[in-house]
Image 1 (cartoon, helix red, strand yellow):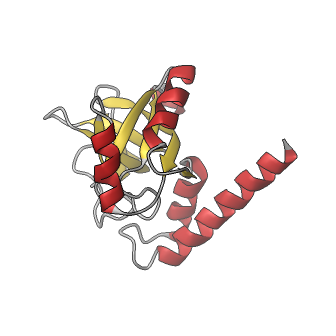
Image 2 (cartoon, one colour):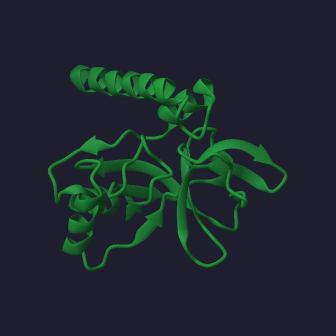
Length: 176
């Protein structure tokens, strides 16, 4: 247990340092906000190639969530394209700044972006690699859930295509 906690703390600290270091390049410029995202969004667990969705589906089934493939580059460097994520429903009042939410756009597509603020329409979200917040706020009508786990093999786009080819029933969530 202590070893797991130590590893989790080390991973969170490493992610916060990476986020801060990359803040000059990322769309979100605030090191404080990037640290909040690193604190409230699970870091991806590095797994063997081809195991991302299998592990995500297993965790989703055990915990009542949904496994989705992440596509696009808006959540880099936090999540590379081809990261399998586990999304679980969350009470609207339990949402916190820095969490990465999945919401449904008007056209039915799913988007995973991080909470950066709150306005009268709901929670303002933005991809960590995007220069601007999303035009749509996340509210009780369009929220799908929060990312509770993530699994990635590497950063390569080719890997993403190979992994998707292995899963005929994969659902996608845009990270762009």
